[in-house]
Length: 326
Image 1 (tube, rainbow, N blue to C red):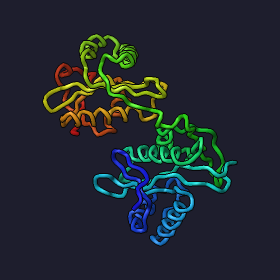
Image 2 (image 1 turned 90 degrees about the vertical axis):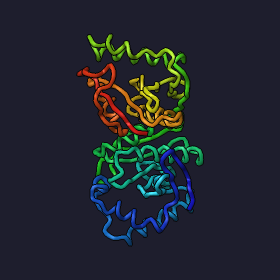
Image 3 (image 1 turned 60 degrees about the vertical axis):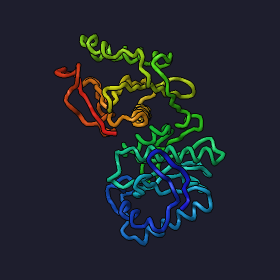
Image 4 (image 1 turned 120 degrees about the horizontal axis):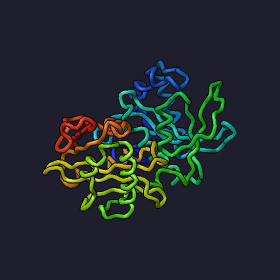
């Protein structure tokens, strides 16, 4: 078994013939193929032919679609990887195209974005290219989001076998790898600047209640702070503060408006959780406001559960409190 890339949760390895049952389960699902010509596979023999083709591509071009498996359980989740096009497509030839496909039961868990970024890193680090491309059905909103979070930009809509299709490009200079996270403390000047912008935004959202919330959001002496940088510019932040002996409270999550929709908040949150766990804490709690629907959606997506409002937020109608076991 040849492994090409790893992420915190995933292993990307060469597809093997023994993957046929899992791949057939995925590709025989009509919902998986809704935006892929709507032609689910009807026999495992066809899957075996596809696996043979993918293994041949890997041998010939040094890349192909790879199996994506759960690092902890070794469960087969789907596939992701770069395909080399040596035939013309939309006026291009000899280029690499990112693709991914996952079993329906694993949708919505961030696997496609996580695996895509690993494949992208492999591509730019292995091949002498300035761009990687992707195509998707404009109606496939989830796929569009994955590509946007992975750094791709829409170039045009072209006719692909009679259907309007998005043509997207990721330039090497804009790859997600240009984002870095540092661990720091609340005295960090970039953190202070981002928090000032956050507070200005919250002052508008909170209205007359802002003074109440602001008294609990001082950042003095917070020892565990993360700042996300893009090409050296601070674009997002977050922090954790001890809530009790076993729990950290997530504080001061913020991403600059121009960098939202790229998965930065999710990466910051995951990094904060990993840090809390590393420090020996087993849970995280947090508070956000009902006037911040994007924050509520972020926490729900990352498996936080709504709990009764705690501490100073008890009885406050405009607060929503969450908890997650790490």
